[in-house]
Length: 54
Image (cartoon, rainbow, N blue to C red; front, top):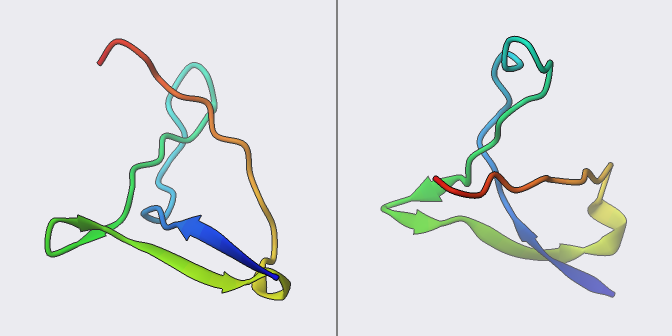
């Protein structure tokens, strides 16, 4: 089996006051970086919470 993955930029310092990291999509030549990879290549997953109203 394979999975579709959106790549994100490496994490920076957490946001002061809430201790959470803000992520942004990785891009190359102004195009979002995504891949299809074997499910066995996944090391860990994470849950992302959207920020609305920006």
